Image (cartoon, rainbow, N blue to C red; front, side, top):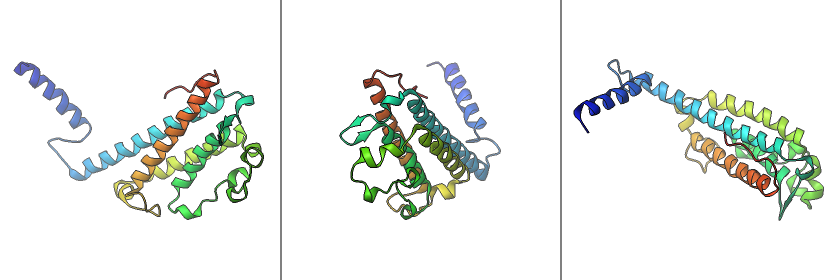
Length: 195
């Protein structure tokens, strides 16, 4: 590579770093830390928003007659509900406060038959309304955090930090979004759009 190309490449890269406050002549460590924290929080929220759009897309694309379809204990409607319910669970600071199933009016401890005890309670409207609420709550929680809060631990002792907990939740959402997308494909329905 010629020296002119190397110099031009360096200038472009340095300009990018300076623009994002990662380096500069007036290098202020506190300002750089805040910029990185802000970038991290914004990026995390944007990725969650994309996963929520994909979930909403899957819910809208499944025909009503297939909403409760599934096999071997897996059902489209229950999976969509599960994605949203775990958003509520992990958005808490303490895992012991969750009342699993309560939003849909059932108690997991008393369920004997998913098809009879749970599925009739899970409508598309219920899941979409629940999703709207959890989107707002998770977004508000994450955007209120700084680096110190993200790196702290909470009652979810099996995670090293709150950031790790939210990254786990994001992976969890995408795993189950993938299952919904696969079901839509297998059933010949319009698939979820990658966002």
